Structure formats: structure tokens, C-alpha cells
Length: 270
Image (cartoon, rainbow, N blue to C red; front, side, top):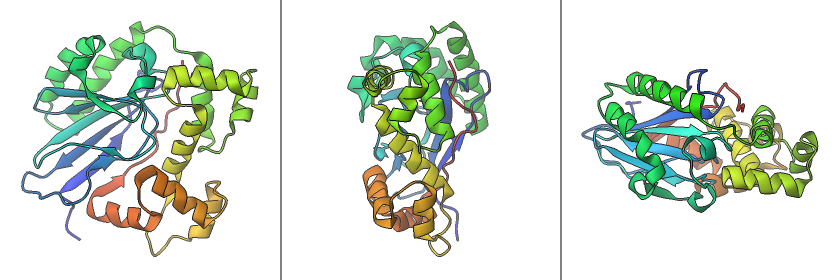
């Protein structure tokens, strides 16, 4: 099969920022491509920053629980930073609640002027590795000087990630000696979405990464492995997350290369 003219990939941050930065992503379209597929990034439940490299354009993205459209043209390169739930309020800082499911130009937010130097540096990045190094350097300074996030929210996020999205809100609240209502209020304020929604998104991401090919996947076994009640439940969750059935998702990543969707190896930490 010929290489796809459109490639989405995810990358690990350095340890210096990994406790608050969930990861980086890149999206590239060949100059001669005619993109016929819906361009977008899979949901991650995280506040993010996205650059259109070479154009000086920065966008802020709220926590998404569904497919996030990417406005891009042939020849474009995009670079994104995904912040763990609870971290964006201290690193940006912005109120995440009004941002949910939205993508907005950075010019609307005076708080993001501190990223102008980073934007200029990223515009000159030679490749993905260079862009990642630039982001690591700038974010290390930002993390070192940022106030402490809500530790209960960060620990809760870490437990959700460690459990592959199989935690319950009651279990998570008990671990923090909080009521489910208290945890929900604090998580919503810090992350822009309730903990149950982040659980749902993270379980989907774990499942999407764990899938094989259309011919090799045992759908009933896959559903059970990732905590879905049955195959119809699995299908409903894929439709909710990306508007596609699992089989159609596998067909999509065979044409638009989303095969480097992966889970970060690091965990959130205050």
C-alpha cells in the first residue's frame, strides 16, 4: 500500500514537563495531496494548544469528547500540545469550562501572549523532532514557574490513566476522601469536563490503541477487555467518540494514517 498523504502521530514529552503535559501530536498533509477524508484529531478530553506551522497561527482547544476537526490545507504541518486535566488552568492559565468542544484563535486570549516566542520558534522548526525539542524547552520553564494544580484532580487523572479508563467516580472519590459530588465539582473546575467524561474518553483511547486489523480483531473479546458490556456497547462508544463504527475507524486509519495514535507512557503529577 502506498504511504498515506496525511499522517497523524503522537509523541512523548520530556520528563521535565511530562507530569503536566500529556503529549504532543503532529499532523502533516503532503503538498500534492487532495484530502478527501475528514481531517481531525481523536478525542482526548484535554485542553490543548495547536499551531499551524509556518503561518504564526496558534489555537486553543477545549477538552473534546468527540472528533476534533482540523482546518488544514495541502502542504500544512500542525503541531499540538495536550495538557493533562487540571494542568491547563495553571500553565495557560484559562478557565477550561467555556472552551469545551471548541477551537478558538489564541488572539482572543491575552493570557496566551506568553506563547508568542514559542510560536516564532515553532514556525522555524525543521521537522517534528525539532518542534518537540522547542516545546520541551519552553514548557520546562513554564512548568517550573507555574502554581501548583489541584492535587486531587491530578491524582484522579493518574488513576484513570492507570486503570485504562475502568475506574468509577465513586472509587476515585473514595481514594481522595471526597464525596462523588465534591470530586465532580473540583474536576470540572480544573479540567472543563466531569471525571466520568474523561473516564469515557480515556477508555476509548485505550481501546482504539489496542485494536488490531479488521480481519484479526475479535470484537466480543475486545469489548470485554476494555470494560464494555458487549459489542453493541463498544460500537456505540466509537460512534460517540468519532462518529464511526470500529470497523470504519480501522478503514479510516488505513487511508489517513492515524496508526501512530498511542498512549503516553507518563502519568500526571502535581
